[in-house]
Image (cartoon, rainbow, N blue to C red; front, side, top):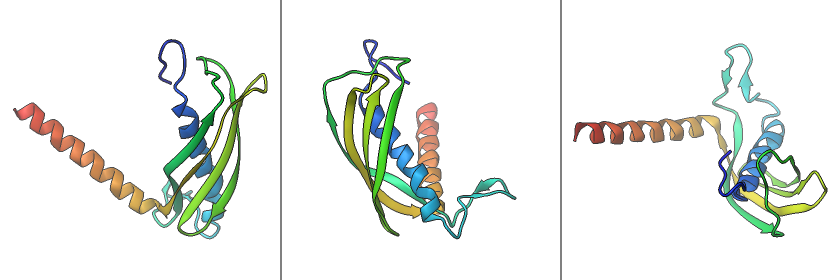
Length: 134
């Protein structure tokens, strides 16, 4: 985890909340299609996944130090075939609220996400080749 001046950037809480939202919404999005094909041991392209698009975060001024345990409690507020919204509260081991907010995003197929990721990798490799050739 990156740190600046012995403090963890608060954006990490929002990112972590989005990861948790993706994990907890997956069973409801994939009741008929498992996210992972256990026989092939690979991600099922027909499965759906929550992708983080926007977020709102309210901070109370507390900072996070490296090695500190942070707890994130959340609730899925909206979940349908097209979008998801997840609200959360983050607190430290003393029970002090560090931040609260919401993350929202789109529900898409994992195949679409994999294609987008492959395109990003391909573009990065092309740019690297151009830089090396020049």
